[in-house]
Length: 365
Image 1 (cartoon, helix red, strand yellow):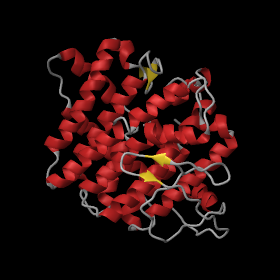
Image 2: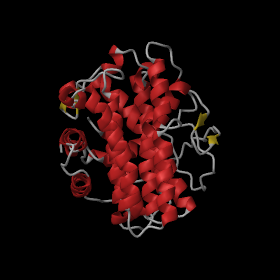
Image 3: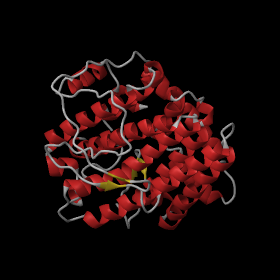
Image 4: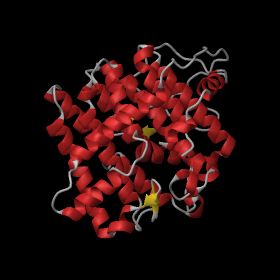
C-alpha cells in the first residue's frame, strides 16, 4: 500500500494550480466527437477507435479559470476498502485447482498486489451513475484479469523483456516463457467468462454491451493495435500524433473500458456513459504521460519495476518528444479536462473519481 503515501494535502494545491493555469471548465454538453488531447500549441491529430473516428477540435482556452476544490473525501480509506473487495473477488475467481502449475502462475501475477486503479474506477463509475458497486465487481475483476494478462505478455523476452513487475520477478522468470504465454491466454479467456457468468441483477443487454466494450478495448483495434505500433516504433523517429495513437490504444483504451463498463453496469444512460468515457480518455492518457515521466525520474526500487527501460530501448515517450517540463504541463491539462467531465455529476458521488484523477497525476510509482 505504498501508493497511499502519495496522497496528501497537496491534492487541492495541485488542482488549484492546474485550474488557474488559464483553463476554464465548459458547461456545454460534450459533442459526439472526441478530441485529441494534445495541446493546441503542440499538435492535433486524428485518432480512430473501434466505435468511431473522432474529429479533432481545438478547444478554446479561457483566461478566466473556474475555481474548483476537491470534495472532502476519505480517499485513502476508500482505496483500501475497495482494493480489499477487489482482491477478495479475484482470489475467489481463481481457486487453486488442477492443473496446479497454470493456476498457481495465474494467481502469482493476478494477486501480486498493484494499485487496482482500473477495477476501482469501474466500481466508482458504477456508483456515480446511481448503481451499487456489486453490479460492477465481476466487470471490475475482468478488467484486472485483462490488465494482468497484458503485463505478463508485455514482460516476455519477445516483447519488453522485463525481469521485474510489481516488485517481484516477472511471471516468465518464475514459471517459464511457455507457461507465461498460457497464463495470459487463460486470464483473457476467464475475463469474459467471468463477466458473462458472474454478473447479477443487470440486464442481459447491458452485460453484452460491457463484454463488447472489453473486447474492443483489448483487440486489434485496442490494446493490440497500440502494442504493435509501439513495437514497430522502437529505434525510429515517432511524431506526437503517432505517440498519442500508441498510448490511447495501448494504455488508455483498457482504462476507458473499465470506466465505461462500470457506467453501463450501473444503469447509466447514453449521455452519462459518454461523459464517463471522455473522463476516462483523459485520465488514461494522463496515466501514460505520468508513467513516462516516472520512468526517467525514479529508480527501479521506487517504481517496483525496471526504470529507464524506455531510454535503453529508445522508445518514444512524452518527455523524449516534448521535454520533461512540457510533459508535466500536458499532464496538468489532461487532469483539468478530466475534472470538467465530472462537473456534470453529483459532487459527492463523483468524489472518488476526482481524487483518483488527482492520484494518477501525483503518483510516485
